[in-house]
Length: 310
Image 1 (cartoon, one colour):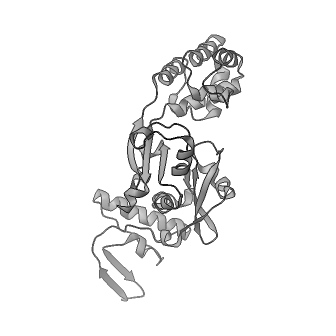
Image 2 (spheres, rainbow, N blue to C red):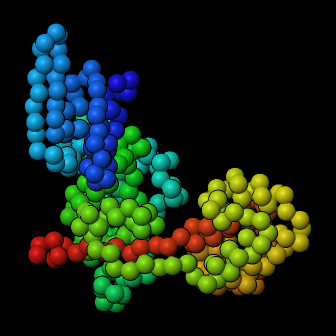
């Protein structure tokens, strides 16, 4: 009763969804009359004054869509829209060469953003669904979902699915791919019509670095926090820092090389050794954070306009 009415509707919608999934009963008493649709009760008792009481019975069926979703629509977006919600995304805010941007709007309120970009030259899982293509052909036929984010206020009501499902055919290409960590835990892209093709577990080299980090006292679950990593590095002895640096040198991957050489992530091994050994604690903290990202299992998803037509 004390919540703002938007949040109250979202909580009501999720409460009935979870309760029905678990086979539990819920008794809710409220002075508000705006939650009937989202709670979708099987029994509704309306108590007014004295003996003014009405009782109505309905089928005990889950409500599939929060009432707020009906007020939210997909529109063309801008990079400024992405910047407004970028802070709520778990990955870097930097995006190279966006192709198309769409947003979810509730009148003038920004509720979500999705960014489609041109595809990278290579991507794990791609060869399972597409033949080898030139870069020109890839740019013509393929887009990649680079970022998809929903404002925290509107999460848990299916807007991620809506955002992907309604914008896939608007991307302007025959195919769309997506690489995501969260898709392993929340299959919103699959619900939106994308097909899960394969998963990519962390490489042996990244696992080897993780083993060294554990041996020096790092909590692997906290590597995504650069603040935690920086504080931990400051507390280590010189020999432990040297041990971590050598682990990055002996287990190099292109993503680490790219940090020092953005335009040449596959070469310059000798120079890479020097860079790692001379790196400040701040730069080393960033490398460790990247390692934490690479420890996550990634999912490759794919969509074809042909399959949509079928």
